[in-house]
Image (tube, rainbow, N blue to C red; front, side, top):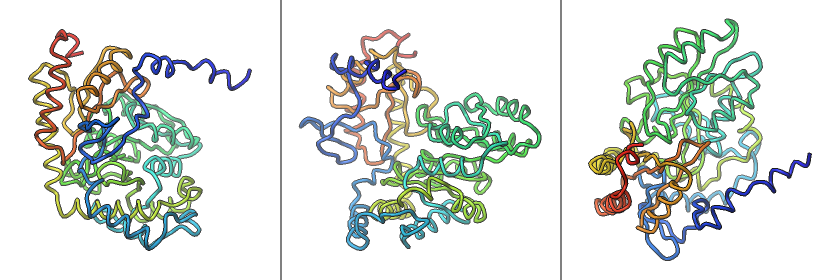
Length: 393
């Protein structure tokens, strides 16, 4: 069989393009943060994970420019060899301190942070147990580790308990969950999950990509539950609240030391660029100085959540800046996305296998009331004629 046969039989994307409903790889002409420009029109951006609105903050941009002036555009090598800067280590120290941990290890992307943590710790003879709604990077990391992979029902401690009981008694056990789930906007039941892990001698990795900067003055899911320093290992990304690209693993010094020498995604990748590192560091410092941003992003999300619920629009169990709105099927998802775009609102259309059919919105600290009212007006116009069964799918 020609392995390229799948290429020729893949027509779904071209069919959507031909119908004028293809919603991906949209070219943006300008990006102010809370607003973007597309084909000369200004749109309210409700698809970005720029929760604190720091991607256009003058302090963050200035730090990024200064790093280019001092270090150039790239380190042209891995941190393991020639690509390690004091800038990387400063970010690690300040991030670990902010999260109440001993040490941190900075990777070039958040995806690589999960890849390095999971596959660096787990291997043949071990078992990795993953929440079914966990991020794809954790799932891929588990598959690459060579460990036995088991999944458990989303945020279900009893399902996790059953899976742990079925593990070989001599196997190393690593549990991976998200702090805030990117498609539902719900927060994991961390106290109960930790309790189950302790019962069975399992270690827990908490992917707090959407928790850092969002919960507990920005310190994340652990602090939200008053469980600081209780999780075995944290992973985070800088492409959400910290206005950059990159990621980190955060934990005890001995674990971080081990991963420095065993995380393949660190050792065999070029290091995080100076500009991105400086931007993340500057954003972290702004977060520490201005915790009001965390309160504001929740106020904005609550404003829209309450408004949509008054209209009868289902937004699930979200208690974070992420709001999912269910749709019926592929054509409905793409059609509503295009209609909202025409009304000046940019949302993300999500289809299987990423998640069930939905529109995914996320809000920022820098959205104004005018922005939020424009979003609600667009949804009211779009959903006014829909039956309640569809609105609350």
